[in-house]
Image (cartoon, rainbow, N blue to C red; front, side):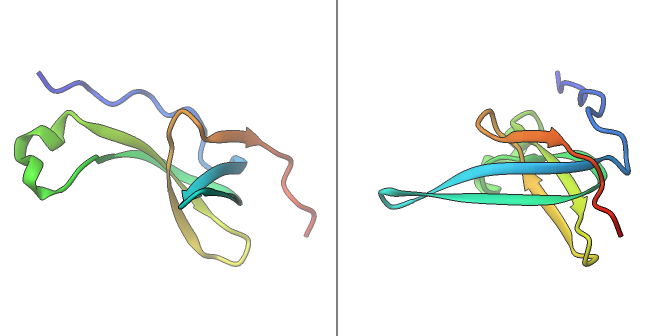
Length: 90
């Protein structure tokens, strides 16, 4: 049985700051993105060789629109820090 996706955690238009650490060799790089929530989704984990297994092995994502208009899709894991922040003054 394929599980149904969970309800969205963040309403569209919510201003978020997403912080992640990316491991590069023996170093950890800090990445931080801020923007307005466009939507949430799920993407399959693994490659095409997984075939039908990709339908139940999925990772949550958040799509943000940055202030310059760029769309960013972020894969969220247990180490990702997501926080709602006040919108910047324009």
